[in-house]
Image (spheres, rainbow, N blue to C red):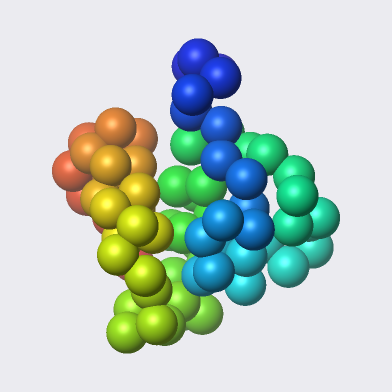
Length: 72
């Protein structure tokens, strides 16, 4: 895991919260875990409902963990 700054609270990101339904919303996960969840569960993501701050997060995670590629 990287620095603590790379932990995300699930409830702060609505689409992440939907795909992390089996985790407590107050849980913190790493950026890598979040990226993996987005990739594996992309079919459940509503891009039109994704707020700007979550889109920015996903863009950053894609650059850092997907090397610029989101495999969906």
